[in-house]
Image 1 (cartoon, one colour):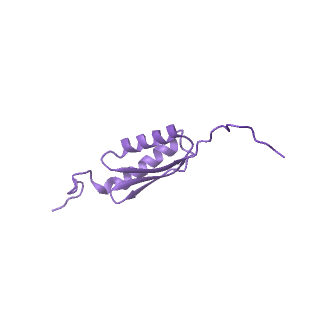
Image 2 (image 1 turned 90 degrees about the vertical axis):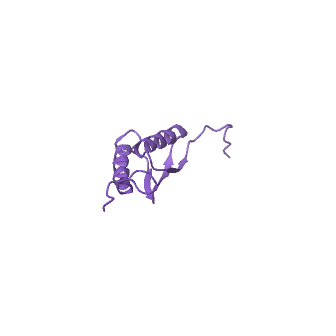
Image 3 (image 1 turned 45 degrees about the vertical axis):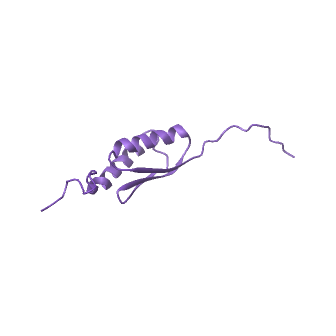
Length: 95
């Protein structure tokens, strides 16, 4: 009896298509306006891990939302670092 294409015992989506879905999602992110970012999407068992650095919290939120939509049914863990530079709150003194 073959279980190819069926849900696994955990009741989630089939695990065998996760790598395909990740590759498709990486292509989608790379071709969009956030394409220059070094965000990586990796499968860790049945969990998806996002790593990389993004310029702002809204950018991070957009990427996380896109990944959740593209990989619905799989748990997603985000380790994205925000490097948002803020304006200095005082003048720099040069000697």
